[in-house]
Image 1: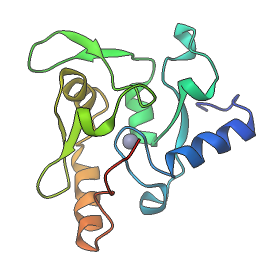
Image 2: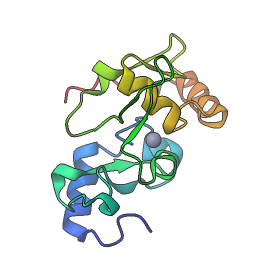
Image 3: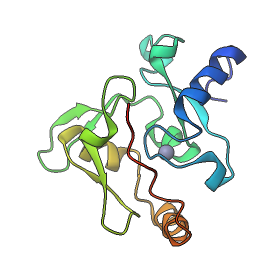
Length: 145
Ligand SMILES: [Zn+2]
């Protein structure tokens, strides 16, 4: 299981820091009903450390699609670029919600590559977001980090 070797106090600190949301697609654990996973942003397979600076909370979908990737192709240029790094990058700088609040738009090469690599607009999650928008629980308020 991803992150299973992360000490519990550190897991708890990462979860609290994230406010119970995936730090890639911002899906809420409460809305999805599925506990997020502790993701090594730089994977352990690439010598990523088990420290607060290299950990984030990721939903099962983002974590599964990211796997050991650190780079992906920007669909606009075809160039390999770094994936979004929740500790080093600002979400609002790289992503935005579409007008309906259901799809994530990549604003930068990193944003576009991450949307594709992590399949952040899978029709299933887009459908769920539409329901959350319907009762005013989505999209989340602007991140201030
Ligand atoms: Zn996610």
